[in-house]
Image (tube, one colour):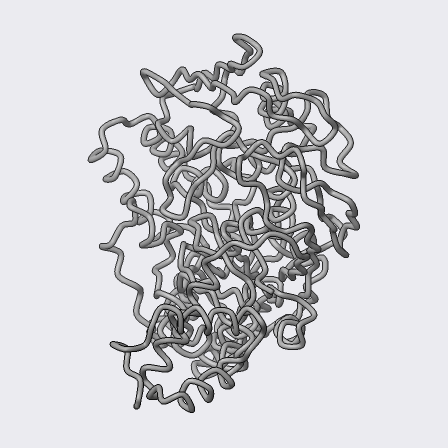
Length: 536
């Protein structure tokens, strides 16, 4: 008798689960099911149900090897100086923040017991008691005060300095309570404290050759630009510690090499796979993809303080020459949402939906290039695999320019050293920005006049004043209206061209469980190591 979903039993499901755990492939299982009288459709349903059950059951033990896409000899274990995804992964494994963001973007407490305020300007942070650092030191208020104040010390070179400047007072009230006073009210402080840079260190820490944090893993090996090896922290303060016994993190900058390493089982996670490579994974039973869209983008940056970007018409010409739809469909293979040069994506509640993407208009672009006196001049665009899909985007623009007599060359440079040698420096170059949870954080890091990563050197007194006013606005309607206006200013005035918000595609072994989306970026906001497991 042919079995149907009605007479297929839970015990039969359990048998399939056992076989999956034993390493049986999808193809072998479907053959077995059909031989047992289960139809193809029902068999597929059984396999999916059993597979989901296996994947959702945490398993302790095992070692994971994962590969990111960016790395350099400047890799650091100093959270204040972290700037690449590679740094963020390690910081999330070795340290903890006062708060963190869950997969829905909601603030959860981590080292903090609570973060509270009556007026959004004066805050109290109550710490969890009994939390141990890797060296046995017990977390206290002095550690938090020191960690936060480091970001205000210009000599440290904190990437979050412009954000931390809001904190005009950081003081200890008692051993487990810290007071933070802001220059102006900012209801986003609990979210700000969830940024990767605001990890908590032992008071007085200056040596970052190893990471002495409170995190789920202890640093065993750290070789900048090469690898790190981490082992499970047996004294982790959370009830559910890490499932993995250890994990190694490396970077494989070449996309195809990263994918091939996964296919050959050399690694179990290949981060930020190029959408073109997804078809390489199709039909491979032992791998799968994890797709999330949270505001990541690759952008073309034109410095407004240098030629040719100092000519307004050149920037306008480039904004009309970029074929956003082609980039979304062809370069990014549909794994993207078309954008209009605003850094706040539709995943954010403050996104301005009225900014329609600029049309691809080569004739308009030609008009502006002629007006700038640059039609026919050779203009190099610096691109690299370090800025995902930037080489393909540059090639699309080069072809469009060729059709109207504009000579745009693609200056392809190595991934190693790209962020220190070309990003923020070259007159026309590409960047890659990880998601940030609030407009204020994006604006503070990327667009205010003193922003540390002001990619196009955009400067506007009006914008700076609006940013401070919006930060302190407790009226949500007023705050939203201001953020919408600021996004429009960026789209029309800055030299950053953001053609699309890219869906992050992490390719993983089918044995990897627990990976979920997060608003802070791929690999679960770079904190995957604490939460994932390996099925046998």
